[in-house]
Length: 102
Image 1: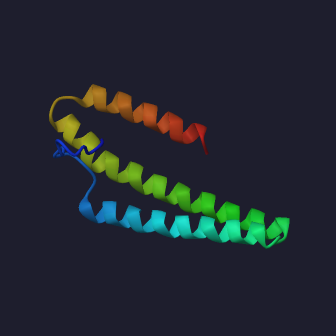
Image 2: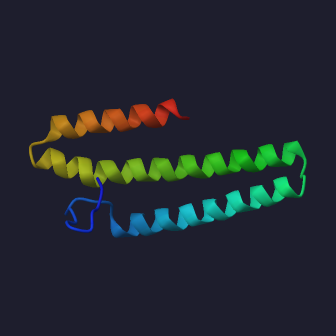
Image 3: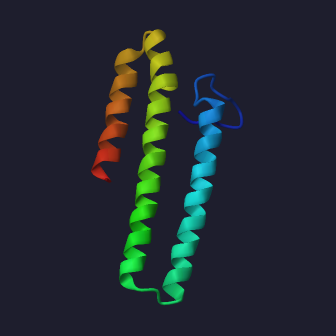
């Protein structure tokens, strides 16, 4: 689910998880800057590949954490509100996209 400035939905990620994801993404951002620096410094292809693999792994971990909390909050609340079929359909779509891009 998405927040907008005009209306904040009551169903969203836990604040702790949102902060955790912000921190993870900041670390990933720094890691990517480091890889760019390595490229500019002509680091070995093997070292670049290892670092890019680490970035991908970190993104996969962030994705898994987001999906986990999404199911615990957004999907569960929709199910409790009687909108289970819609929530599961949307979750399937999101999972399909995640798996497609692994």
